[in-house]
Length: 237
Ligand code: GLN
Image (tube, rainbow, N blue to C red; front, top):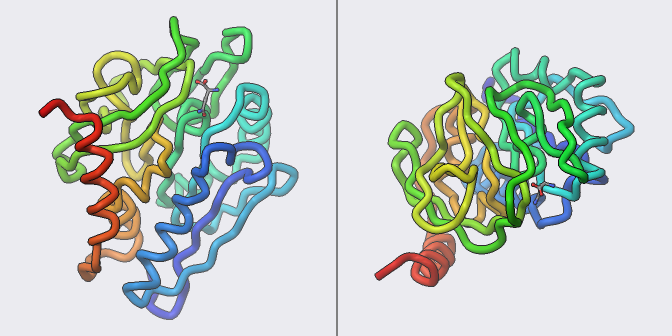
């Protein structure tokens, strides 16, 4: 990123997929960038508007089944997100947003609905709703941290050979096969709300690092307190 330009964050479809506080992921990225003196510009793209392809970091959140189907149709027709990823932008996709990035996901009656195919995953409706705290060990390629968050979904997700699991589940359901989330290139998908980046500031820094390179360390005391409290509440002693 040239030093005179701002980091461009794009939040996709606040009017359709923002029901679980996932917009907090934007606030965490903004705060962690600004604390390091990195200027930030955030664009909120409503679903009637085109998704710009000039962003650096894209984020999309969770939501109900019908808005999820609408969001998938509009994103596919729009094409801006796919162009941005081709250009080297990164993407954090949460829950409904995560499922949309695959080739297919389950609609409100369990019917298969086409995704936009940015991740080699397939989702469908699972046997029971997965609700509650989740803890999982993250892929060492992304730092080997402990992932913490809250899940609330019906979907289960099968990972294809084009992606790697984001983590191995210790507590909770995640993808439904002992893994949680996935990653490929600069795309990370996860079922976790919380919001995910407030619970996992190391992941916010993975995204910032992909855009700006080396990052100065910053004070993490409040994040650490939140993580410790949540992890102690769920991890077996
Ligand atoms: N509708 C999807 C499911 O139930 C996504 C839910 C969510 O985003 N929390 O699996």
